[in-house]
Length: 253
Image: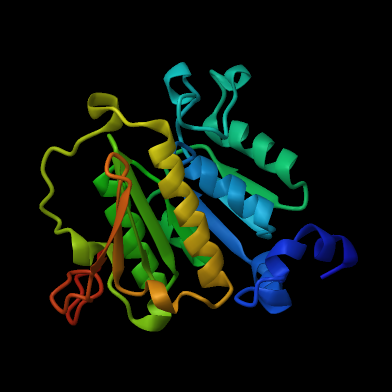
């Protein structure tokens, strides 16, 4: 770590839970963010500001006017641009030392597997169950830490998968049998709610990279913005989980 980096990240380095060793781990780390929307916006910005060495941003969508109410990485002038390119510009304006790779199409199958395998941690900031399930499965198969979040209306949730701790995975929480899922487009969402969850994803990511993730193992956090309350739910690893259980049913890779 050079003098400029020591000055820039001094407030983080001062924390005993981070220190120079933890900050160096953050500087050396790479993260894949799946989704450059409401969750991915604050997550990417805070990780870049914190000094993460490399971000890989994946999103196949373009910026629309309706996104601007909550997707704070984009600007009014970004409407019509690819989200990943708009996000790249914001990230590099925040911290030019953060390397940014962008994937402006649907990342899936073998390419998703290989991309996950190439990074140190994954943030699932997507907005649908099929993507969350697929990202989770590849993270389990590659033993890559995963921080996954979701938000709708005035509610949000966040959990993480830590292979080193043999923790529960996202599939332990939900079965493959999901029905008609709700969407922010139909149900609505308060902008700062996705900001809270995306920011918490960044917090958990930084702590895991700095070796401080023990307190978050097997916990599901639920946020109720209307009541202004957090709830922590114990989520033990499920032996019968089809992904991380005793008899996993992995497909592809």
